[in-house]
Length: 459
Image (cartoon, rainbow, N blue to C red):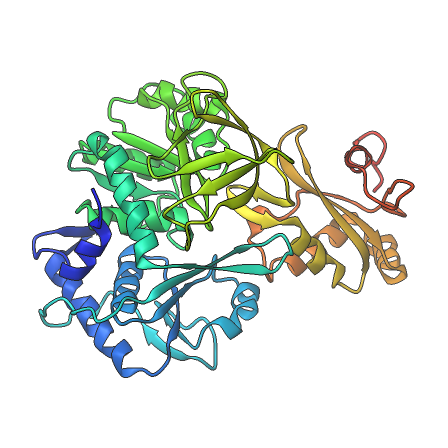
């Protein structure tokens, strides 16, 4: 199956297609078409080319996305609406489409659920716009990733070819944001192109998930490892009478224990999808056994770099047909499947949100009380981020005067200008000097030793 998304964007939805729903409202194809047409006309009349798109409501987001692409605009997707994030991207966009004003000094079009424009035809496309996302590069600065309609269409078509047999007349609900590539593809673009309605709200509570699971005979759940790991306890680890037809997980590794626990409640383990903003989806698996191998999607070619074991990738989701060297180390197996062996860079996942340790350390070191900052992922007693701070003389005075808790909160507030709260360090240490070896480099074992609770109770 090819051109699934492009064919849908060319023709638009049928009047009867159910686009989205929530507990008190539905959006039909005819209403969606009218909304897209009205916004499309506004965008055509605007001289600005680069439009930042941000909305919590998935139906409004989809209207903005379709109208922008059909108008030939660049649609810019920020990872979140944090003031620091938008400020860092301010030179990347000329105008804003959002459900509320989120920055000053830019042209603005409000996305509004209350607007009910008259029925109209689907806009005729002259040339498609492009989608621009940002992800944490190894330098710590947001990395610009451009996606063409052809790239997005290739991925949507492969997803439908791979998984459609499991999704008869399915409705889609999600616990992850559509502002990121995973939610964008799995909750918005793929359901639109395949005529599967999606829930316009984000599912934040297990009770909401159970409500919709009981309401719909066929349901597809788009979720993440962090959320799925907590779900079985919320369901009392009991087998559910009504369960989603399919559960997807992406954004980070899902443990075998969590996969088994979800399978105990829902009857089958989630389908995990491995990929990134830059690459799109690369492979998928179900963990029927511990550390099950990854199966590449049909359109993907992979190899293993001889020098460092890095994943080498060829994909129609990339802008060219050249081999791309990824920052993931793999072990390639005889059957063509592979295992992941960890990252080769300093990009990590915290609560499935991609985080550059370099970027966060740099922001910490911009604070007048910080001389040097180092971040480390801690595995015990549970996976979390730790921060070790070498203070300036002024910082030492503040620590002695106000204590560690006040210092922690000061740095957390500083980080919130660019990072979401769930990604912030949970444990803090203030050594006199950060430990280094004879070459002046930080040694992981020495950094981890800083967080030995018995040795560093006072700091």
